[in-house]
Image 1: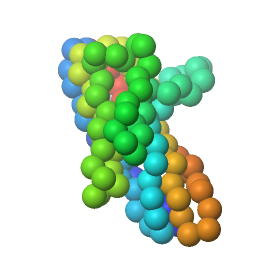
Image 2 (image 1 turned 90 degrees about the horizontal axis):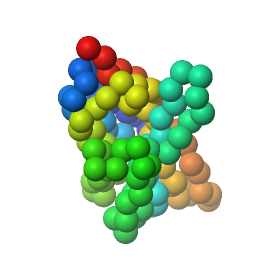
Image 3 (image 1 turned 45 degrees about the vertical axis):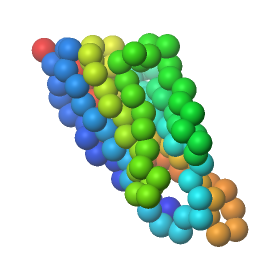
Length: 119
């Protein structure tokens, strides 16, 4: 089994910053793509940022220049540094990873962490 544990969400004022973390553990042979998605009330879940095993990154247009995704390969952990937050960034943020386990590939989701941007 594989577990994804997210942390770092919370309430922040507009213009503030937060750092999300997602640690992957369990029966892991290899972790490929790691990413962050978000879902705001009444909206579909959308990709925020992703990072491949080679370090290539991809960002949604709405967060380019403000958010930075990174990963610690030794700890199987992915981070999302969020700066210049605005109310439109309010959502539940989910970690999602592509993982090779003994016998098969899996793509589990984290439990989600709430990010609220409000004055």
